Length: 188
Length: 188
DNA sequence: GTCTATAACGAGATAGAC
DNA sequence: GTCTATCTCGTTATAGAC
Image 1 (cartoon, rainbow over the protein chains, first blue to last red):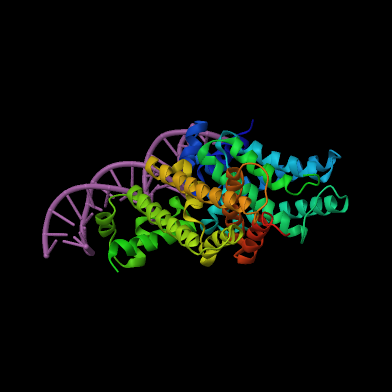
Image 2 (cartoon, rainbow over the protein chains, first blue to last red):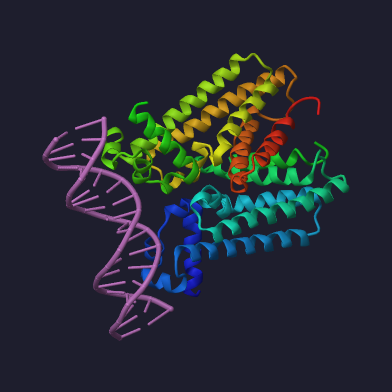
């Protein structure tokens, strides 16, 4: 695997575990046994590395959502698949990259901020469509704008990860995710 | 106001805005126009300052919950009052102190970790009682253990703050909080 | 209690050799 | 592409005077 990718892998994990202000070039270089200078060759500064991290994470997440759409499952199942994406991130004590960066938001350079917001916007758009489809098909039941429910779901899942992480207990996360989603599914 | 309290006030805001790894003794000293050494006199190290921050925050929060109990309102109204506590924190771009520290959890000294977890535990206990009371009085309706719903609420509100903050939009927070809580209230 | 001065270390970044 | 060496600055912390 090429160095640039290895750097992203390590830095991604470190940000998800420790936050943007909780890791350094020295940490990444140390784990890969390369010099900090090599890191600066691939990513000129921490800001550029941060942008690359969000870019890759958001792209992969978007692809995962396309894959969910391609499964041909109903809206309620899509929501469960969506929560499952978060559950996979939660393993080995990671927070959602953009959830973590939302906490660090006030200290982020502007280009990173924009990409974090776009990540949430994209998630909301996808969820909004799923929710509207589900309501139309009567597999989901909720009141008010689908967009509001979508925002509640994004926040609810991000927060479930945030609070469950200190307990290192994925059941805590799964339990909250189920309550959030099953509350929307018809036949409860 | 004495210096120790002024320090807590400034440090609290900085942690809530920027995170534990996003502020420094120099930031606090600069805002108060005192020296860093004076800061070390009142709080020997960043870890001790951090402990004092959580201690005061958790105490005030617990007092606020006692005050809610003293109002003599029904369980559904108590939940709305609980969400209102979060809404007040959300003003001027602050995250819940312990929600922020949950993000920084991996980098915190052990004494701070314990207090963060205790904060969430205490919140869950209070909410669990409210939920059980509300279910018994038929002002709240939900399935499964009250403790699970309590955890979903804590996570949902923390996450709503986390995600709404980049948008600087309290309506985003209020909307999510309402959906979380009104979904539990009878007569929907 | 508060200051100045300074130590000790780490972070982000650059220069230039290989 | 990767290295060593170095720079500059910020951070946490201490010593000792006032």
